[in-house]
Image (cartoon, helix red, strand yellow):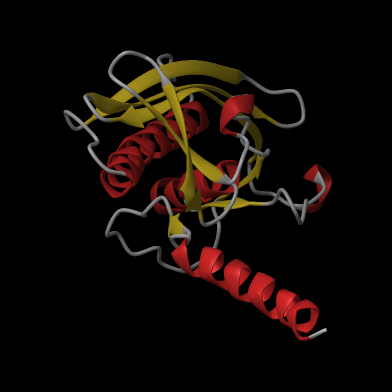
Length: 202
């Protein structure tokens, strides 16, 4: 009886020891550039649709790419929020900084209810890679159209940052910098479309 009573205690101790040996999960985020996002009145309204990302990146874990093209899912390194949300926030902030364009996706304003120019924007991430032995690469395509049936701009661009992301921290930093470049390019395209310029893509 004593041996049987002691068995659950031993099992619990073994489980606790296993948990203690597991390394803690580390969380990473796309870091915004050191630029203040000021307040004030909006000059444009933009319906920024959810960012589309490749399905293999639609997960909590960071996915890094080796120099040989192999894929490594980092179980111990997670994004602090869904990657699509992280990218979307950087784009929304860039749109506001450059154009005073307010994102109205979650609080749409009927076209007839505002005199401000209104646009709808969609962004698709084609490539979002970083890893040991390779730079961070962010490829994306996007479209911006004036509502209700106005002119549209369709653009595509690629951004590279750094020479090699040796660690998950370095990968997050390099991807942040490349994503910031993408966000600024998207903001420029909205600016050019709103000004009626012939060349709408940066």
